Amino acid sequence: MAQFWIFQQRINSMREQKQLYRHIPEQRLIGDCWRTCIACILDVAPDTIPHYYEMFWGQGEVISDKVHEATNKELKKSYGVVFVETPLEATYEQLRTYLKHYYKDMYVIVGCNSKNGGHSVIMKNDDYMWDPAIDNSGCVGPMDDGYYWIGLLLSNKICAV
Image 1 (spheres, rainbow, N blue to C red):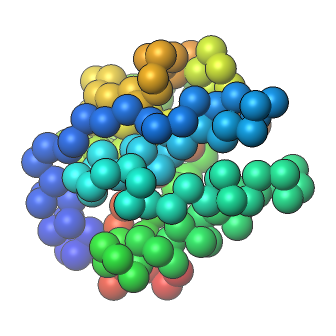
Image 2 (image 1 turned 90 degrees about the vertical axis):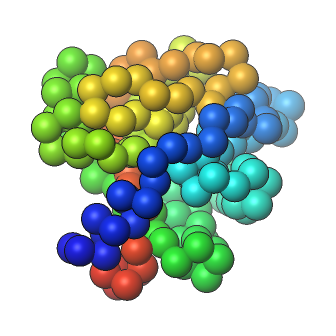
């Protein structure tokens, strides 16, 4: 666990960036809020993280596993980290309390629903930190599966991914 803490303590700030693409599938535009959140935390440009959601879009209902596997391969190779997430069934207020107590002073990527559908934002403690959406659509509730997804970037030295 020590390597995880070392990595998290290195991140004193993050680069606030907006996503490059809105999510308008009928126009073949696939939003990139998730990769933009990762880029913000790593302090790199969003286009340095491959847009695997766009690459895998239309290949079945559940593509998140493929996207996460491909993204983790790239993150591990290029940055020495992997993305891991866990679901939390909660109200928005419970989510904020949970983050404040269990993820104190850490930047986390929260998968939620916005007014436009599935979305990712960055939070720290119980404060709303950064919405990469071009229209600041925010986080209005859990994902369609009923969960908020709490994601972290961890040193790949402690993860068997």
